[in-house]
Image (cartoon, rainbow, N blue to C red):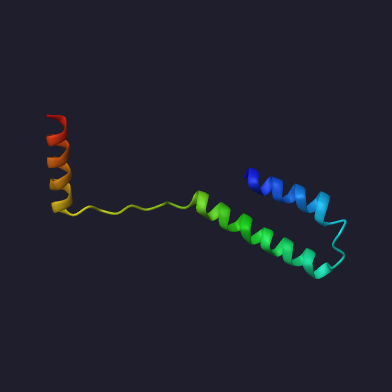
Length: 69
């Protein structure tokens, strides 16, 4: 989030006075909107999980029991 704040600060205070092309400004805001959308989706979506197989569970159990004893 802090990176996006600095990106907007830099854009409005340094780039806007130097860039006079409306196309560049439109592309920036389209890109910015997509960035915010995908950031929101990545924060709110369930990350999911991988189910271990039975053999993997047994291997982890043996490894933990050998390390603790």
